[in-house]
Each structure stands twice: as structure tokens, then as C-alpha cells.
Length: 118
Image (cartoon, rainbow, N blue to C red; front, side):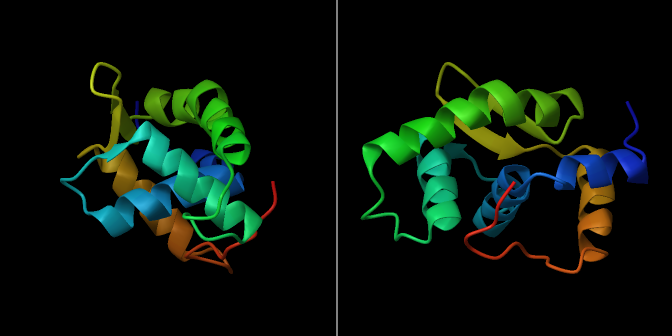
């Protein structure tokens, strides 16, 4: 499935998806991150709390949102891959990632700032 620019903006309409993309890009295109660590980082940034101080409850809520709402949307567009056996998430090498990054460059607030809403 080729990601159209309008669909890329739909993906980027969510602060959580922007944060997932930004965290995975900061990690490196050929690297993966555990679902738990990614959830902790997203929760930390959304709440303006350092990862060391974020509560387990906030991390768990972020993980539920990511796994059940945001990952399926990113997976269906070939933006991320998830190895459920190893509990690892990474960006794909698909051209849709490039389309998404091009759309992100047009956003007024990219990279995403901490304490985003949505």
C-alpha cells in the first residue's frame, strides 16, 4: 500500500504516533526498541516527566494505547514492524516511512514537543 500525503497527515494527527515516530528515528533506522521502553518514553514526554520518574500506571496506559490503537495504524501502513515474540518495535525500510517524514517536515511543530495532546 502506497501512503498518500493526505494519509500521512492523518497518521501524524496523533501526538502519540508522532512521538513513536520521533523516538524510533532518534534510535536509528536499523535499531529496535522494546514496546515497554517506547511506552515509557511516550508517557514521559506526554506528561512532562522524566522516564525515571514516570509511574507504572502512566506507562501501562500508554502501552495499551500504543498496542491497541496506534501500532495497528502504523503496521497497516508499513511504517513500523513489531516482533511480538521479542516485544520489539522498529521502523520499516518501506517507502511509506519516507512519505511520512516528508509530511512531518511540513508540520509547524516537528519534531514533536513534550506535553503534546491528542
